[in-house]
Image (cartoon, rainbow, N blue to C red; front, side, top):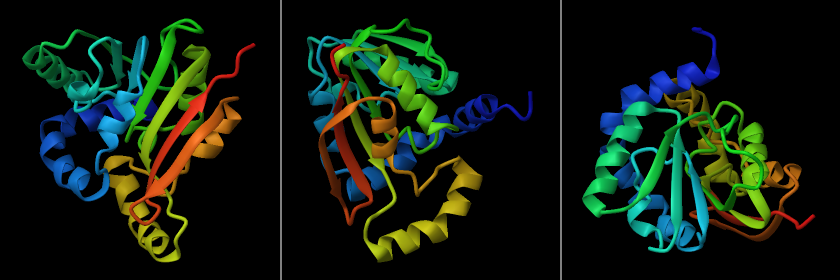
Length: 208
């Protein structure tokens, strides 16, 4: 259906898949620092990466992690499969919607999401799903570009946001922390970098 947000996202990222790695690389150098390594190094046990895309995080995961990745774009997943094969990395890759994950409750010890909450149609629903599939005591690891708390970067983000949303469904003014709390998770680490435009957060699902 033309008006379905999930179908629009799938079509968008399928079209963008061949260019994604090339275009994201300079942005990562400028903004993310060691963010991917920071996020993935904290994964343990059964781990789900939501919005795994082309698999740019794959080299960063510890060897003992039992990794599953989900993405809405089949063409992005094709690239991730090739990358996993080149790395010799075992990973189960699944096509699916972040706002309606296929796994039953309490399926994963860790959920990792990097640069994906900015582009899902409903970030609140996506975080709620991530919380649902975590075991009690499990951790959500988030790396995301967000609305800055500083006035000048925020002004720039507000100016660019309409274009970014129209071209890439990329929301520059979202903030994950309220969504994380609303999903019932307890934030145990939160920091902002790069003039407040990059957020790192770790949240735990309370026992019981």
